[in-house]
Length: 117
Image 1: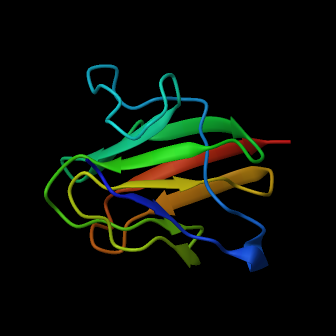
Image 2 (image 1 turned 120 degrees about the horizontal axis):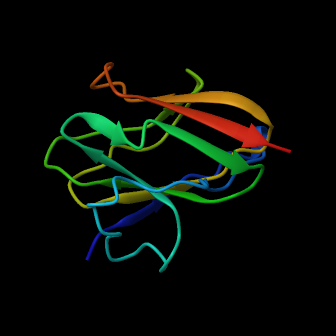
């Protein structure tokens, strides 16, 4: 069973994250992601999908679907813990606008999230 990681960042007023999109349709949601919940997979050193539209506070599930270690960097500041194979991290954005998610270990990984009010 995957580990579910969560990071509490009260200074950013965020607890978890959310998306109104899903990973590649060929990638089934892993155990630990609620049925029908949107998620982003980290596989082949890329995010899937690469762009999302969500509302403020909406949850996104990030899943490391490969053996490489990943982390998540939000707008070059907030970071998730390291994610091992099968780990899931949940985050929600507290402010509307354009946000960028990357990985410290694999700078080519880039996700653009549009957060609506």
